[in-house]
Image 1 (cartoon, rainbow, N blue to C red):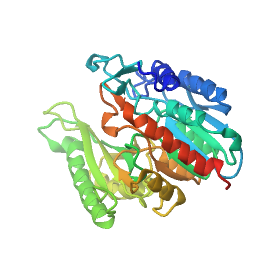
Image 2: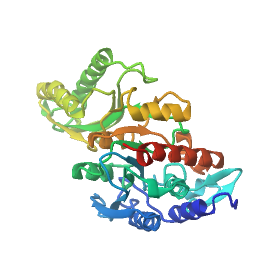
Image 3: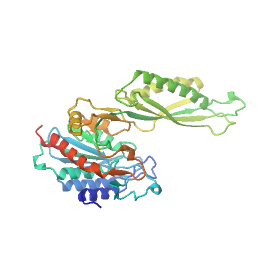
Length: 388
């Protein structure tokens, strides 16, 4: 193993060896507490004051978040990331997923890019600074369950902490600043009809036929949304509504007694989840009543609002100057809306490529580490070491 970053490699190997899979499947879902405990000790050794905050979990597994703080003041910078990973199929990996493997100028391991690798890079950046000059707080935030419910970031936001003026989330963006992404909501429509013998339609109420009309109404609603909302900042400049899966009935010679449709909507900035959910319910409930079937609209998870930081914000301008890249947008969701909710100017900016995330043989390019370290040192210098 290369000796260029011995401490960084040591910490990265340690956190990769601590599995912290987040999954909606309770049989796969894991605690992230061991990762949080390790990071708390590592940042304590660097002089940070560390607080571990419990987070709820539907699976009953222990979930934790970390707020590590160095310095005090009304401004400052948060460096944020999540400690969970997606599930893996170990048979598809060419290297051991739960340890660091360095080869081909890459650092392999589950979470190396998305995004456990960000925390050892922060440590390396901090070690090269004169922290006796700190004038505004430097805060490291490590969260749980970003890959599923985002309950970690949700818990932190509900507590109203941490407090700072700026935040950088180290998701993989190729070290190009990102100032906006779409929101996402995932919903389930359930129609309850009445089954009966298919030879006589009057004996029942066909939930599948009712769902046919519900789908037509949803597609009409999609068209209205796409004509009403556009944002050229995004590659796909309009909101999307995707019909993801449908289930219903049990036999061809029985009237379909129940039907369920699951769909998602990707929201542009300015669109609100609660308002859309109310609009959908108001449009679809009359359709169900016309067919005489029961209707429920249920969120599959609370949803993530769209995220957008103004192009002229101080953090965006600073990141653009330091990276020589104009801040852009991404298609994936992040914890940005929750930090934005806390009143912080927020961007997404980290090493690695999102194309490597959620894949077998996930890796972080070795060449991206030193540029990221230097960039973090400059951001810390600008927002923590200089006078407010």
